[in-house]
Length: 415
Image 1 (cartoon, rainbow, N blue to C red):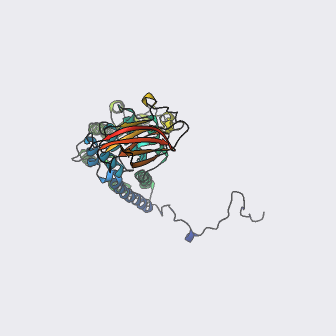
Image 2 (image 1 turned 135 degrees about the vertical axis):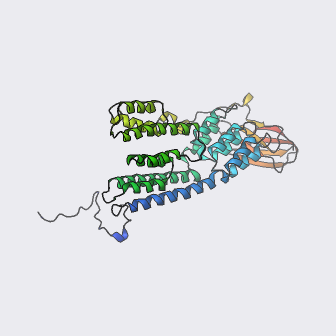
């Protein structure tokens, strides 16, 4: 048989490997895991940097003040509050957006819509959507649809959060590989020391628990107890954290008894204790107890299978928006002005005739002099109009479709 020829054409391209022109290898050079450790540290550093960027982007780097100002804004401060929130968009937090939605006395539907349209996250947030659902003055469907158009748009802070998740995943995968390397590599004589350094390097409560279990595996109960006693330091625990801590102490006590008695698998007393943790405990000790019971043949642990719940997809509402008709215009009116009298703003709630989709709103003084012209390009909408530059008095607000007047209303401005 002659020498095989390299495949050409079709799905194959014969490329000669050139190390100088190729991407660097991501494989470790040897059993020490130094390359993987460097990868983990680099990912952690990138995650930390990205976290700082996110903190500076979110709510203008002052969530507490922005949330307070939004929650406590009073009636009459709606325009100022709306403009304040838009100035910090598109990076508002869920909490601030919810505060804006819930302050109905200050922010009418049109202003809330203006703010949320500037923040694509609003279309994806369960909390924001629930707050909109619960408004006493229900937001019209067409406004909800405008907000939900953000489903397929990402703001800068959402992109940064996706980067943060990617760095976190890369760090975790490298960390998992390092654990495997330290446990199975015959070239590492003191693998426990390497794991201790790794757990300290990674930090976090879960790794403190791992350290305690590692000390216990070499029967060093003194150091194991010391780690367990100082897992949370001086941190004030939530009720859930306290329950998990107690569950871990219970689990740890059973494991210490098994080690002290020289057993590999749990006996009847230990099984009873693990059952108690499994059924009434909290957090990771529940999973660890389940594993112990599974090894002892007491329970079967099926692998979960998850499917997306398509019924909860947020963008389901915007696929085929129904015709909203007159959306509440009374007496077949085409134009509603609110509030009237107006202060520093009013809302022009309009709809155009069925065969029209573009028009204009013109504000004139009582003597007919032109003052302000706004173009509208939706069949129906609520437009926030500022009254800056308009003196107190009576004005005529007219809705035009082309050159034809659809409807005119009187508007009083008081300041």
